[in-house]
Image (tube, rainbow, N blue to C red; front, side, top):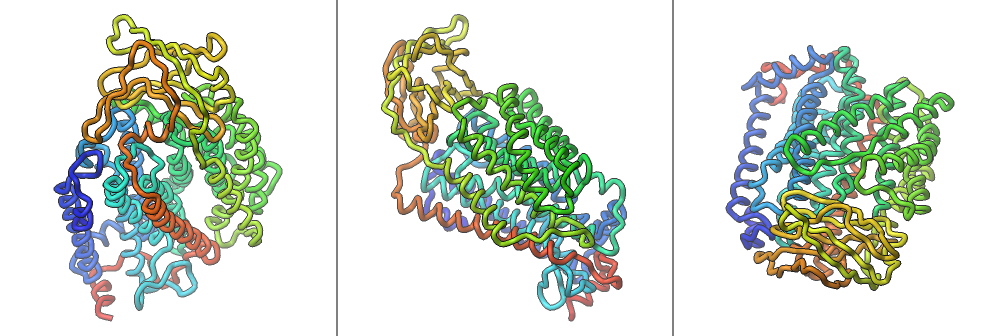
Length: 610
């Protein structure tokens, strides 16, 4: 990997890591891989009993087999580390811009070790699970080698963690080719976020396999973790909305209700089916505790921009109400009807919440698209949640049979909701004349008067604000209309130092921006855009201004790289679908002769000589 990256090395902080950092990271990664392989060999050959002792302790505490209990503990801790690092890292980039290098940002360490921990948890599950020679041919475990069978959840977790970890070197290559893209929704960033987010689902699969083991006797404490786990799944899915949580989205606001409704259905429907009465509310309570703690830690605690978050309470109440009239034993029907409730009452609740807490409230400009696509996403998410819940249901419980047409319609609905809002343009012919007035006692800060031409430019806008960021904080100010087409800023705006201040406007598919002040950036050869006392400038592409460090490359290279990463994502999702399908068809039930415990040194030694 270091040799490959060296081909792209230019040493500039706006175009990938320094080659010395790449080499060090590659050597450390190789050393960690060699160390784990050596440890696995020592365990299987009986040269170390450490894993046996740890596995036995986890079994006694949880009442679950070691191949589920120990990896679950490792994955749970790793997810907490990763999610903190993720939100803190996003906040630091919003406040301070790009890093001097990948190891200069302390939050990167939380992310990388969290993702490595997820991959390690999957590898441990496979290592311990394949040591159980009593596993039946009929269970959901997958045959590996001549005598071993690995838990599906462990395989899925290893895949999620490995793909996420691979996002780091791929992200560096991406920056070297396309420049530094300070955005969450770049392909490699989504790869890393998705790895952590979907590993929560893999962990749910692993825990379900553990509960299904005939030797399992779950303790009260481990049962308490079930709503926590599903709440963590909701936290993971909601990570894709982070740009809206921080009020720096680079795509249409329509994505926000679509993502919220889809996440609510996919996570809260399984919560109600799996946990019974109050299950959706328990999962939402976990979500609020985790996200609330993160917001307090990152905002008041670390002094960074505080992330806001959806509430999901209205959706949970709507699901609980549906469960009083529709049997949860018909998972897909319940999911569809719950989706209707989510897409109406839940959507209305989030609409109100956006005006109470979010810094980019949902405006009337989202009508009717926000209502229509939000409703479709909610129903599709509810059916998806029904499929997930069916896979997680106990083998003896009723399972509703689903048709190919229903699965296809759900998939197409999700793809439509995610692709239709995607196109962006800057085709509105508009400009703004501005007058800046210094703020007394705050050097470098101004109040602004904005006169739009045409005066109707902001009419029907899904958002229209003044955004300043990357100068040591972030400011989002909604202009107040004082006359037709004339606005004044509601908060002072910084126009000095490293701040980047601009007017942002999104109407229909047009996402535009106009610079107020942009600092000189010698690394990328960008000149200063001065904040003159009065000026007139035209609106242009919001993407070009926000992604100022991005390079101009050929469309063939762009589409080729994006297609390759899209192919990885598709295979990834199909693998998760395979795992859920396998779990749905057969429970993980080792034979009674097996204790499902980590093998002793003597037994491990016998396995390696077979």
